[in-house]
Picture 1 (cartoon, rainbow, N blue to C red):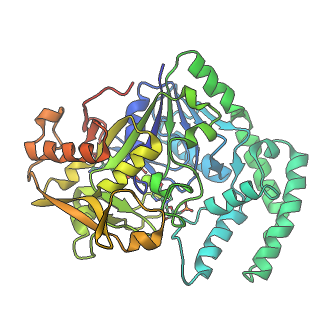
Picture 2 (picture 1 turned 30 degrees about the vertical axis):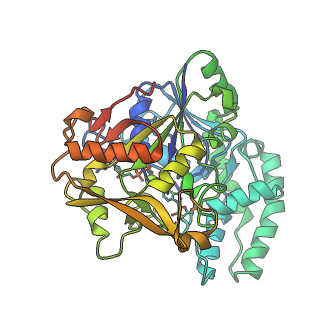
Picture 3 (picture 1 turned 180 degrees about the vertical axis):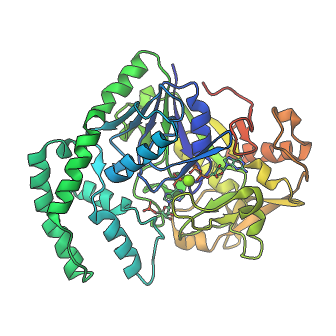
Length: 429
Ligand code: GDP
Ligand code: IMO
Ligand code: MG
């Protein structure tokens, strides 16, 4: 039975939350495999809107097992607050499980993330300030990292903390001229977190592999997007994890032979939050065409206005290749309903030639000019469409062009933020 990865194909915020929730209605288990509370996944149920940062977007259905895999960096205070907020809205959070191998975000991680960004005059990444980068740095540097399994053993935690905090306080003092953090306060706070979270911590790889063996449906929910991937994104303007579909294996402890499908989520246009290259970005005077109205392009985590631009076919083809996308889901088609003409980028012009492959070098990318095709808008409401054939012919043509550029058929189209504003062309499960 299928295991399906949901992955963002652009710079995040493609609508992964909506599609994860949609597919989760039939899933037994939903697994986050990377990132942390830098993510902001929106799910709209009736008149209610939920913004999830750490907890998998399957949590809104009772009875699903929702896993935070080993690849996620977890701020336990944020997790408990998110759980409490959901419980206060009547959501059952008893299905949440946390990998004993997941790394902790400690209080110095967000502090260092923000100080690092503020101290740079050039080369700012525009991070979410949630401590994601510093937590992954500690993980890969190895000496200073603390995992959930350490948190559950008070002696180990205390020993690790005293070792690490000396170094971090030194850094805060000597590099940034800031007061250090109090070890006693952190210890008390984290022991309290441990007491509350202990029943949820387990070897989640066993749970996931057992579910797959039993033929259950497992959904892996990517956060961020392919162009924010540490290896495949617009480095260094990326996040510090592996959102690409391959990250689902590493970040949850399942082998590649266990993944059956990769569902690529792509907006009908492009957005990006934070710094970094964006070839098809619209100038300030046109950005409201996409950002405002039904676009509502403001960050879920930081509230920052999202940069907006036209659909980029070079990126679509690149991300489909990197992730091995089997099913394409095009989001937010309705946002284009009122546009008279729509531009679509089919390649980059570079030094008189044409590049079809997304370049590694940001210097090359900066010298690329998008080659646009102009398509006529459909100028009518698409939100009521239930099947592809209900869409105006011009909207169908636009989707066909996206599928052609991405070299992948369109499995689903989203025409609004609600669950029922979704067109299914090809069943995923
Ligand atoms: P995620 O991070 O990929 O889960 O995406 P976000 O939640 O950050 O951003 C997607 C935004 O678009 C949210 O406000 C969703 O409610 C909204 N949304 C999702 N699908 C559609 C759609 O088809 N049309 C419109 N207009 N909004 C959508
Ligand atoms: P979801 O899961 C959009 C961006 C930040 C910044 C860069 C690095 O909702 O799609 P970080 O705090 O991760 O070190 O910031 O990555 N970023 C996102 N942009 N959606 C996200 O998540 C993002 N998570 C991080 O804006 O440019
Ligand atoms: Mg988001």
